[in-house]
Image 1 (cartoon, rainbow, N blue to C red):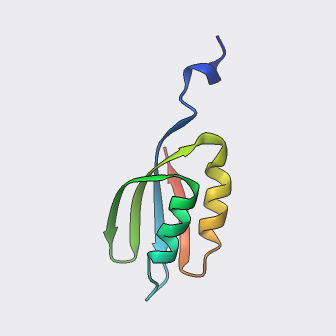
Image 2: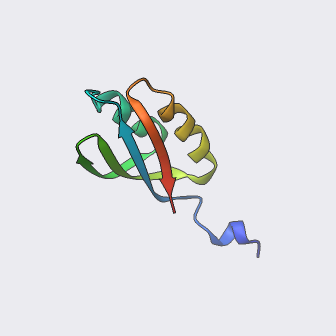
Length: 79
């Protein structure tokens, strides 16, 4: 059996987003939810830690879309 068949196609992933000074998180969270299911959220100042259930093949596109928002300084997935 191929490795892809053993791994879930849609699983939880942790995303860290650093907002620009004074930016609102509303637009950013809307973008996250367009790409996957928001499972958990923690905000500490300008940093957002989100647990998102997303298809593995959509992670790069989601990250690109989120990182390009004016409110976002940096965004990255964690293993």
